[in-house]
Image 1 (tube, helix red, strand yellow):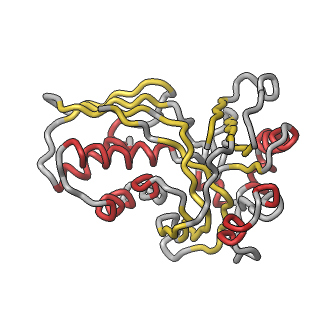
Image 2: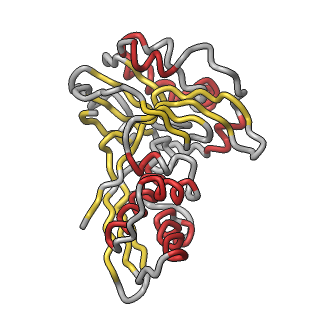
Length: 270
């Protein structure tokens, strides 16, 4: 069996406070998009992790897929497995690709070895791997708060809309992004806007608080957003702490020649 861990975008991202544990409280809508990695897990004589596609930095034991396996193995008598990951979602791009890989590994192992873990149990494991990992268990649009692990259902459906994702060759560390942001209580109700206002009205109301400082440090990221609007986007924003920027369009567009060749692109239906 092969599964396809998908990316997510942030529709608005408000940094509302600093926590005593060192993390920040946020408010954001997490929305899944079908830009996917490819994950396969099979039983083997000994544990092995292999990857292809976009190079994954760091040691094998630090990979979130490996950590997900080791976490479940601590609680269940799992046999050795061979994990193969083909990486297509850019790393450090604000798209949650690594978190998706981790959560899909948990779900895959749960099904493969009949562990009978329900979604709430899988979310409890996922939060130990990363703040936004639990989102990918149910993988449905939510209003996320807390560290990004507290979910509220949101009535939002972008079906039929077209999304363009552009990722420049820039890696932004999450800690670096948070260091430049001053938490503040939002002036607007993000859920009310997303549920009740048309996308054309989001431009000045649905804000990613990271953009001001990130665009100042990396002007090329801000330029992507500007270009997407010039191409006719109804709404455009940086996703997460960057560096990816997305635009939502009514219909497919031609972007060839609009961005430097070294940028990574994905486009498709929401």
